Image 1 (cartoon, rainbow, N blue to C red):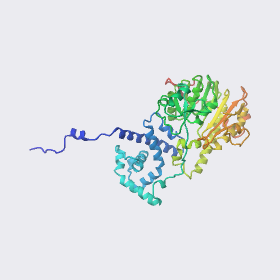
Image 2: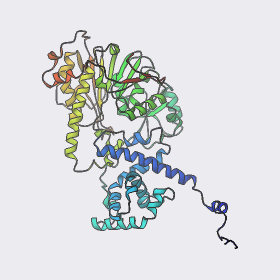
Image 3: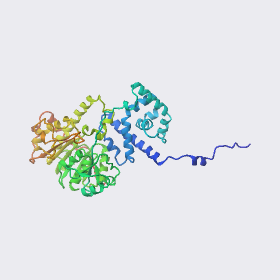
Amino acid sequence: MARHKSNAPPKATRQLGKQQPSGAERSALYARREAAKILHTVLRGDAERRAVASIKSLVFSPSVRNKRGTFALVCETLKYLDVIKDVLGIANVLNSKWKRQEPLVYIICYDILFGKETPSIGDAEKFLVRRKDALLSGLATLLVRKKVKSVEELLDLSQLNGHIKPRYVRVNTLKMDVDSAVKELEKLYRVQKDETVPDLLVMPPGSDLHAHPLVMNGRVFLQGKGSSMVAAALQPEAGWEVIDACSAPGNKTVHLAALMKGHGKIIACELNEERVKRLEQTIKLSGATNIEVFHGDFLSLNPEDPSFAKVRAILLDPSCSGSGTITDRLDHLLPSHSADNTNYDSIRLHKLAVFQKKALAHALSFPQVERVVYSTCSIHQIENEDVVSSVLPLASSLGFELATPFPNWQRRGLPVFAGSEHLLRMDPVEDKEGFFFALFTKTTNKLDNPKPSELLEGECRGRRKQFYPFLWPKVFFRAWNGRLHGSRR
């Protein structure tokens, strides 16, 4: 019996004719996956009202390859997110499998509906491209329902526009001097030295340095002016021991190391495991060797522990609302930043302020500390002047007084208590970002501090009791030689 001959070409011949994805297509596929991971992180944090790293920090971490493409995808998808969700609801094309991967679906739908090119490779992409007509029909239906003629009318065009801010670059003087950095960067852009921070450079808005060799090798850091002023305000001396109470992502920490010329010791505290990893990456990039990472809560440190007897200065930049850098962080693109979130903001600000007061009081209670900087990237009085005012009785009893950081700076604290003229504010409009600083300096070295009951009444007395645990918590330092220390050195 004769065998039936197939007309199909041999398998090898069929494979030769199959078109392979181009490099650009593979790069776009990878960017969509990276964007989906970041979108998942920020949306989950936003939904849980939990602080996470900014979108920029997540995108420009060393693990993200295609930074520019990923950043654009995340921002544009967030900008159109409400529209995309409505279209998916109308089209009703998702099965249970893809509903579990919503961030990736949102990214791909942006590309299909509003992007320049339709994605061509990837299982999720092929699934949604096959349903492109249904998605476009859903978009048309949405326009009719909302009684608008274009997608632009669906968007909130009042989002922070016209926010033109210079590019600030801080020179890492552990690896490079300022004049050499200026000479190198002037090959691409106009460069000026900042008038306030000696190791800070000012470049035109939009200067793109994310892939520049000086950034990639840690000789310079892309760091805003307000952030760079924090460590400079503390003025740590070479050889000091310093605590950075809330360290990650680490730009201020490594700035402290540079100001200390790599000498002394910095204890960098960070509670969150993922942020510890980011902190370690920043320290490694900077080349600093005098930083010891403490994976734990700053509030768990016992000020009376002999391990901290030589600590002379503390930098406290605690979690805050980020209201002064909302455009930099791109938080205004997140779902919670809508017109009806006033009540949420009030509750959140109150909770933040409670923590900030506790952390500042704790920082002031270390016996040998001479200088404490409290800073936020917030514009709210409740996180700034009110926090400082609440700890002044304690600060005074411990020998501290408010000093004036950067005396030539014009904008000072709101006049809500005597001494607020020592505080420093940066204005979101005039200075392109909102920051706040308070500098406490010790005028007397009181070896015999008063008893807690003599310092504060009521709530503050109860708060102070929390700062002196009798049992050392199970936390650890991560030294840069990779060893884990089971006990404090």
